[in-house]
Image (cartoon, rainbow, N blue to C red):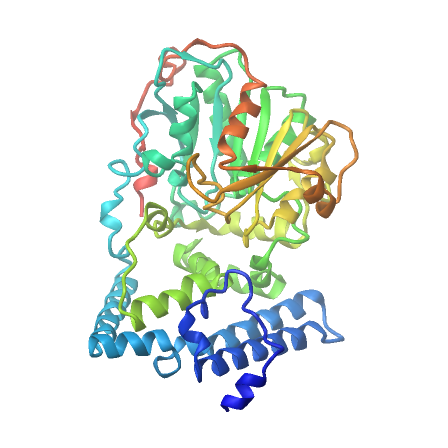
Amino acid sequence: MINTLAQMTDTTPPAPRDRRFASAAWQAWPFAVMSQNFLWAEQWWRDATQGMPGISDHQRAQISFAAQQMVDLASPANFIWSNPEVLARTALTGGANLWQGARNWLDDEKRLQTQAPPPGAGEFEVGKSVAVTPGQVIYRNRLIELIQYEPTGGMVRPEPILIVPAWIMKYYILDLSPGNSLIKYLVDQGHTVFAISWLNPTADERDLGMADYQRLGVMDALNAVNSVVPGQKVHALGYCLGGTLLAIAAATMGRDGDARLASLSLLAAQTDFTEPGELSLFIDEPQIKALEAMMASKGYLDSQQMASAFVLINAKDLLWSRMLKDYLLGERAPLSDMMAWNADGTRLPCRMHSQYLRRLFLHNELANGHYPVDGHAVNLRDVQCPVFCLGTVRDQVAPWRSVYKLHRLTVADITFVLTSGGHNVGIVNPPGVPGRSYQMLTRARGDLCLAPDDWLEAASHHDGSWWPAWLAWLQARSGEMIMAPSMGAPAQGLPPICPAPGTYVLQR
């Protein structure tokens, strides 16, 4: 066996970001043989499931994904007797790591059954340690609360910013701790900021659809912002699915001659769903029908079901690495503010979720110019304002090449940014964090669209956070500083209702 190992020259390196065999302990015999054999088997299955004739691309991707899950299950890193790090820790502690791991597992099972938050989540209480940027809820309807944030000085840019987060997550991903809050960053830089906080729906909202999310969400919020800051155009920002909804609203406004938007910023938001990432593995007609049957009894999709899908598509980081650390090594990594937010899930109304999956993911109606609003199809070519569009390098929810497809759908001026990180970490990207970088390039209105690989070659590279670049982009499209507006608009029936973060975000 030793001679065989010595003769190995054609080794298969781990995939990028695969940290299972990063430790030097995996280079020793017999663990080097185990890990290398596993990597060969993984590559064999990957090749075998890519070349199957007679099936659709979707079916091929599903088979490849299922095979990868089975292969990952058999990784030598997952077992006590084949993981040198676990064996060394067990010998060092006399097995105390396994005892602590068993206690961690029992604690997790209890929390799962009772739907309790993960250990340490109490340190990140909404409104006390996260989502603490001062503000007031100045508008509320059955679907949203609209928060206006207090200015840090007496002077602000005249054009307010309206933030439309995704309703599959709670809005405070953009207002985590003060040091990594995008909302606080904007307020401190002299902007009047408004943010939508979505209701966490129950069975009572089962009949709310995509049209309700646009009307009660984006348009009602925009009308309220116009009441507080009359006569000014609005910088609109949408994140993830909130960006998709905002793009639909912007196209509708362009079609109808509504020119209230000064700019449109879309963060990790898809408008063309032909390559929507690994979530598409769970979306086809039979699976949607099964999902609809499951939602019919409750009236909503439970947050745990959505979370399970995200765990599966990132199983190496969210499942197997956690099992290794928590249960075999007996370690508990301290909870971060983002991890606590990620555990604070939301539900999705039955009708909206079904429409979203069918119209956008399955039939790609928005990119095809068939998405209906008020009885007429909208077209993204009607977007009139300049666009800031951002993708992230390691995004498994909205792959950057999919986000980039907006270039083919609109003739508007587009500044595209590709930043390091993933769907969440790439967005929550404050200045001063080491190792961050981005690329940036503007396509002027009407110019030809570069292919993604050509864009990579042409776009300039920058170290650091993309936040200052976006801020400069916004301010170049904003007026000179003026007196800050009042909080709310009592004369127009919009008095402050309650302090931020409001009440909807606290619903579980």
